[in-house]
Image 1 (cartoon, rainbow, N blue to C red):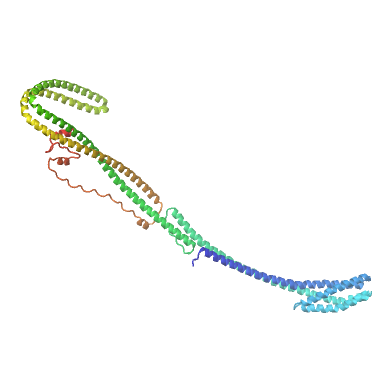
Image 2: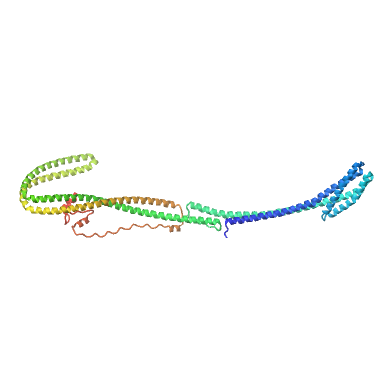
Length: 558
């Protein structure tokens, strides 16, 4: 059976109630004895003392009336004195009889003596009465002052002895009553003292048990409030305090588990967010590079598509021209003459071009001077002006060369007429080849358009991925910061090392290593695939057999 506080209080108050009932019982018993002793005193010595004093008073009244009757000469007064005397003597006789009947062992001889003297007094008193009523006052007075007086004194002495005896009995009863009172007080003091000791001891025991338990609980709760979760309470009692202590221990254990789990979770979140941030940065960097490469490839593809389309148009026109040239080759002689005239005209136009180039050179020189005056702000313009000047010089030189060449062309035009006849079969064959080139260019145009659309879509997706990666990186960094704040908040609570070991963070997963690049497949030397493998981006070869002057010119133009 558990010794709960309720049971302890119940037992304590039960014992106190029992002791209180015992005190009440003892007090009632002792008060009853005291009451009985008081009653005995009242109905015993006190009553007998009162009776003796009353007898003494009545005896004095009888003797006085006897004296009055013996000395009175008035008949009416004598009759009155006699009536009062007889009445008082009758009452005195009743009182003496009452005293004799209620006499104790010690007082019975005195009461018997009083009764005997009263019996002797009655005849003498009757004689005094008779003499007084007969107006024999002298004889009556002599008898009253003689024998009647002696008997009255004897009765008075007996009454005095009875009064003394009654007072002695009252003193004895008073002493006995004092003893009863003292015993009652002693018993009450003893029982009350025992009850007080039990009450104080029980109160001290219960209060000590409760206060010690509550003090430990208060200290533990204060320590927990200060962040110390290494509290463990122990009490030896088996009551509600133990239940409270076990509840507090369970609360601390659960709180310690929650804090440990929160610490583990925050550590894992921080580690995972850092890993996610690192991965997101890598993805963002890769996506940015891919977006740049895709954008560059898209621009290159747009230029390539434009060049392919232009080549296709040129090939189509060349095809038409070649076919037309095949038809007009026979009449080219006349055209040669016209060409000679045209060459001369060209020579004149070349002169104009030379003049334009010279003026352009002067303008470029002026622009360079103005750019030099502008300082840092004109540096770029100075570079452009320098390039324009170089271009003008080259144009002027080229125009001069063209002028000399055109002169020679006029001479060679005649020879060209002769050669035209031999070129007709070649021109027809060229027309057929140009037709095939035109068809291939159209197919390349369609394929380039599709590739361009795919690259643009890839560019959009890559840019979206880059934006998403940056957002993920920012979110993961914010999550890592919040996890660190959570760890700082949780660090307010202190747990033991064993609990920390159980809540050790999970090792962060490292990102999977990138797969090793497979060795590049060796291609046929100078093939298109081999050229594309040697450069980054796209390599375009207009003809088979490796790079040539046309490829170099196309690359320079791109």
